[in-house]
Image: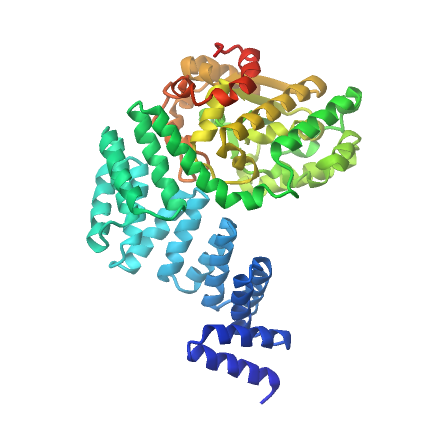
Length: 542
């Protein structure tokens, strides 16, 4: 027996004896001797993960799945570790790989559903959870999650039925209680919803995602009862959980926060000659050969961009890319101090290379839908990319969404987002206000120093005078008014990319206008930061 065979046999023997620590130690030793058997890689990866070396563990698991694509355990371990590292897209693909080998694999179905929920793909998630329910009819977990999803879609009767079935299997299961609380809330029973959630929270000890979800819904129930201070306290407690979990990633000294980056870019633009930034780097001939018109829809999150995008999307000549950042992928070398300097002197050939990358990615995402259409590239924080837009796409039209700054910052703080570097800032009122101030200051400087074809769109005007405002926006982007613009609620699909989707499904309403007044006392720490913007955009003073 060779050394490699002997090492492998020792590992297998330890696994059979259920001596996991010994198996992991033997696997690590075997790996050092050059044994790359998938079992060795999986166990060695487990040891690395236990020692906090997640990146190396992921590399070993990827090697295991590449060497043995049929190895379900390797795929499952990879999926679990990627999920733990918040790589939800990678984890979803790994779970789907298991389902390709075993379509009824219950843990993989549950994991795939969870990852799709994190990616706001509710259609895909519901499909996976329903398959899990059929795979194991005795399991309460898929029933509970489906109950929550039904409640979120306001299918109250279905939510109650699924929740009661889940509780019959596992009394008091978290998801079922959440679904019933949400059903109460949707039926106008905010006090009953609050009471149920309070009982649920009293039983919960862990400061985790489940507790955050319960606090989030209870805050809404308290808000509905006019108990704004109590609601705000729950929003704060919910955000504190997310802050604690994500601070090690987004508050390390080596990472520049988005507000700081925006201010540095603003200072860079202000110190540079404006002629340099108004000089064109050629035309976007690549885009001209594909689309009829190119539009960027930006502003600041929670400023009404999703409502506007869905309304404009009712036009048959409009196609939208929503919340996918192909612009960054096409311009990676044009960021940071050296990148900004290159951007200022960008040649036509260099710009064309970036444009070709952008349109290739756009084609991969939207396919033939693009041809001859008006493309709306909607991502609110493209506001931070205005210098890049001006250089690469000088003839693009820009829709700049505006809303009362106090409503914007409060809404950013109140709503739950999939956390990234930008969304992390919204976990505190001060962070949200500081980011708003930095982004809007950069926008002012960009508009002064760049050649931009820009139209402001005020959210409150869209709400109060929908037909006229949307018709004028359509005219600006090169299209005529169509009554289908009013049917934006019908175009809210299964990929819930922003918190706006739940509100848009209710149709046009003004419930979000002036909501800051209910929380005015709690907004006091940030009103001084926001007041100049309130005045600049003509909103009533605080």
